[in-house]
Image (cartoon, rainbow, N blue to C red; front, top):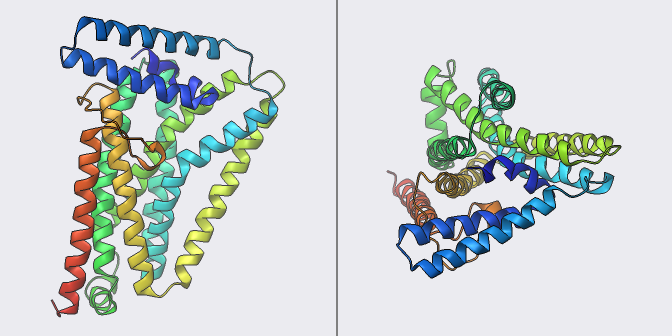
Length: 327
């Protein structure tokens, strides 16, 4: 839990070292859980002590100069914000293509509220109450799993509407009047969860990055933040604009695949966060991880993602065949 409190600072300076420390901590807890020989546990503890010493040296070093500060600020926001941008932009495009612009205020309200709550959570964590690293990991994990479940549902819904006749029937039933209240709140919830999960973590990273930036290089950090913000805004515009040009069937089919894939990614990240908080037991395996895609060398996370992938492939295939049969 103590390491989680400096995780953001270390991530801003040496992400590889941060990932290695976390993986070795999980390995240490696994050895304790499995009642491994004392010699193995002591060897792992010594390995961890060495990594923590490396962490201290990195955090005690000189601050970031202008170049690294700019790149770090740029990469952090792009990395943390890309998933949220993809989800929110897809929802906005869905409403525009559906002719239901009356639902846009709810979606925009969702992500704006998420940004505001993320800032308030940071203020509470920094100045009002002490929020432990484990509590942050639990919040991230549960939010990621909730968002994954909703995204999976929306992905199946959009795939079902990717066939022209089903979309036409849906329009005739539901979209001639005002957008249903439950549907509006559902889209707002997706927008909120997708953004809130990233907002608080991003604020923590920037707080740590600010502390690690050398005097006189603050302008580079702000320039990196501004550049990343513009890049995400342009990306959102391109996604929505590109989606509006696609045929309805292609739009719904492609978007359903993207949302289902993001659900699988978030599920892996949610499991990893709960394991780091010691809520779930880790089951490490000897496979390489791809944290950016939510893939970690852990049996529980990989099994959940495999089940979800099979569910998506099987569900999409079954619905497509049912439509072709006239079902």
